[in-house]
Structure formats: C-alpha cells, structure tokens
Image 1 (cartoon, rainbow, N blue to C red):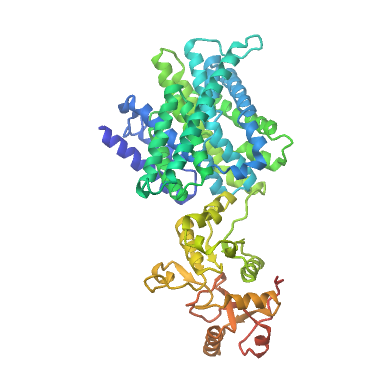
Image 2: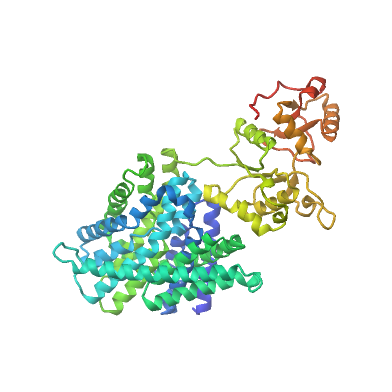
Length: 619
C-alpha cells in the first residue's frame, strides 16, 4: 500500500463516517473508532499506519495543534463567569483526583506497575472537546452545565497532555512514581515541569495571538483570501517554537492563541472559525481512523473483565468524586452534578498520546506500552459508547434539556414583541433579539464588519441556540434586515427566512429576487410606524380569519384588498396543523386560519368570517 492510498483512504473513510454520524445523530467518534478497527490491523488490513513511520507523530502533533486551537477560538469567556470557580477546580483539583483514582484502579485491578498505572491515569485526566462539544449540541443540555463541560474539555487537554509527558519522562528515567508522603521529590518535579510548560505556552500564545490579531485587522496589508492560511501558518509556527523550547508547551500555546483571537474580535472571525472547524473535523477524522487502525483487538480482549471494571471505576467512582469536590457549594443541584458526572468522554488527545507513548516505551525496551495503549482505547470506547449514546436520555430523565428555539425575531418595537408573544402563546418557542437600529449612526450601517460587532448572530450559538427553523428580521432599517437575513442564511440555514419589504438594490432588484431563500414577510409594503403607533396606543386588535367554502373566493378577494390598502396586517397562518409566518406572496387555501392585526375601527365593519378576537396582552 502506498502512502498516497493510505492517506486518501483514511480521509475518505473518516469523512464518510462523519457524514453518516451527522445523519443518524450519533457521536461521530463512534463510527470513526469502529471504522478504524474494522479496516486496521485486526480487520481487513486496508489501513496500515505503520507505513507512515515517524510521519505518524508529525501528523498527530500538527493535527492536535489545529484541534486545540479551534477549541480556544470557540471558547466563550463571557459564559464562564458563572462556572469559573468550578472550572478552575476541575482543571486543578479534579486532575489530581483523576490521576490518583485512575492509577489506583489500574494498579489494583490490572496489576499495572505503579509507573505504568500513573502513566495511564495521566492520559485519561483529559476529556475531549471534539467529542464533548458536538455531543452537547446534539443533546441540547441547559447552558450552565454545557459551559462547564465545554470549558473543561478545552482547557484540560493541554494541561493533561503536559502532565502525561512529565509522567512519561519520569517513567523513562526510572524514578519512583508513587507519590508517598515521605518522598516529595516526585511531586516537586511534576509541579516544576508543569509550571514551566504552562508558562512557556501562555507566553508564546499571548505574544503570537496579539501579533496575529493586529495583522488580521490590517485589511490593506493582508488580502482576504490569505487570512485563514496565515492563521494556520502562525498556529503551526507558534506550536513548533513552543515545542522546541519545552515539549508539549505548544499545546497550551495554540489554545491561548485561539482565546486571544476570539477576544480581539478580529474581522471575519466567522469565516476563520468555519475554516478551522472544517480543518479540525478533517484532522479529527484522519487521526481516529489511523490510531484505531493501529490498535489490536486481541489486546483489548486480553484486558479481560478487570479492564472493564477499571474503566467503570473511573466512570462511576472517580468522576463523581471529582465533580462533587469541584462543584461543592457552587450552585449546582444534584441533577446537574449527576449529568456532569456522567458525561466525560475521552477523545483524540488521549488516543494520540497513548499511541505515541506506546512507541516511546517500546523504543526504550520497556514493557507495558501496548497494554497501556489498549486500556486507554478501552476507556475511550466505553466512555464514548456508554456516556455518549445515553447522554440525551439522561438529560431528559434529569429534565436538563434546554428549550429548543424554533423562531428568532430581530427588532425593537411593539410589532416585533407582539409577534414573539403570539408565537409563544401558540406553543412555538420564539426568541426576540431586542435590537434598536436607531442607536447606530447611519454611517456605520454601511460598514458590515462594524455592524456585526453590535449585533453578532454568531453569538446565538453561545446562548445554546445552534439551529432554528425560522428567522425574521423586523428592524426599522431595510438595509440591516437584508444583511441580517443573509448572515442567518449563511450561518444557520433555517427553513424560512423573512424580512420586511426591502429597498431595491443597485441593480434595481430586491433582495428576495436575488436570494430566493429570503422571503418578504406579511405584505409587499408595510407602514411599520403606523402599526407600531396603533399598538402603542392600544388601538389595534388581533383576530383570526378562517377561509371556508362556499365563500372562499369572496373572502380571498376582500382579504387581498384590505392587505393592499393597509387596513389589515396578516401575521401568522395555520395550515394542516403547521404554524408559520405569512409571506407577501401567500397563496391562500381553503381551511387556512390566518391571525391578523387590524385597527379596532376596522373590525366592526369587516365582513370576513371571523373567529373570536385573539386574547393577548399587547404592550
């Protein structure tokens, strides 16, 4: 097998597994691991990672750098305030609890020598952002719990990797590893190595991130098509420099670079995040396929039931103790603590480090490397399969599922608030972004990057809203409505996107004519100020019109006439038990139930068939 065939096969199988996993709504790592095992040394032998030689270590290192940088870039410090102390405890005290607990389990249950036992524990202190973040999006757990798990996954990876390398160096040097009270040399050695690598990583990350953010803001110097590639080169360059100074310090450096860029609000950050997300998915897919393919299934079975019990101890005893101590008196109830204890899947960092450590131990003539690797992969398999596949059910049982927003409305005026209330009253989960366009000066309305700093649809995801079916832009500015609609289409791909009537563009065409996915809401032309004034003065009334036979034609004609004369404003339509926003080009059908807004003086003269007025508190 040539290297070209090997890499192309790994890429193809990995991306295929990602597509299937996304379609069937399961964690992608499940299919990646199964595919790697099936096609690797213990299966069909289509993929032989050993052919890469030392190149495997290069691929692993650069891929991990990209994955961790993406995690830092997606980290929302704004949301960490409510969980900052618990997060600090998890990545400090929690690491110690997992290190000691995992080592004891491996030593007592599997007769691992203490050095190998502690090396195993150091590898599994990490959770994986590439596993945790997609899983939480899939489950939709409440935001505070999700924030803590995501923050832990991103920040503990470089800390755990550094700790694991220090433990490996201790094992290779032949020093005693059990941390007995009478021997303080080992704890001091670990602490010194950890602090040194953390310091180097933070320093290089801050310097590189700061310089890179300044460069990205110079649009005249750096063309748009090169920005993402410059970031990629800078991340890999900073990672390599940090690694040259002290091994594994580069892992924290790339996380810090991502955090700095996110905080700096660089232009086109959305495009940068999308690019790195795609590169991260590719790296994650290829790595899991290659590493799983190099694993021997026989070695997994050789661990026996003792290996399974050791992992169960880590999942059901060590992790709950970790969560209980780290979140003590921090405002988490027992249901939240239960979920936090249950969800701790291990990911790509543990897998890659275990594979590299097995090679290092073998090169030094030390036994236990293959067994160590097998136990780490067993931990990954069990935590991903058991915890990942049941997380949704556990969240529902504990009543921790976050409400799924179906409709997002942007606008700060009575009509936008009324429509949001109306949807909520009818059982639709609607969210209003209360944004006043009048607070933005006219010259800034034409500057899309500046405007995006004032209203960032990207931050909806930070609020736990990663998908919705309807987006409605109702601000007073037609230009802003068009910008927001196009951005929502690009970011979230909702089923329905609607705006108020838009002004013609430079070519004389409307936005909806150019972008067919964007519809005009309610009516072709809407006197927004008039309807808002009616609502503010309590002169408007909500009614429901039902179009029925035999008067359907007459009803349809009268309704169109009233809409054209702005005497009535159609808002919502219920058709075949489906509720949605009305479009300006709506084709009416028999049985349609239309919720409309009209002036109270018009209601008495209306000849259409009406139900009783809709009861809704309008402010």
